[in-house]
Amino acid sequence: MARNRNSNQLASHGAQAALDQMKYEIAQEFG
Image (cartoon, one colour):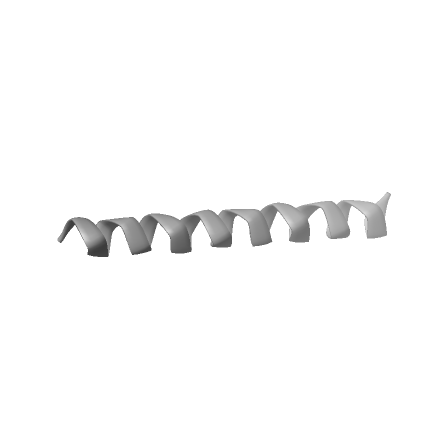
């Protein structure tokens, strides 16, 4: 169970990083 929680944490962290990158790219497009 702890291992599953750890992998979920890593996955959500990667998703958060991807969302942040997407936000920056969209912000640059609309300037």
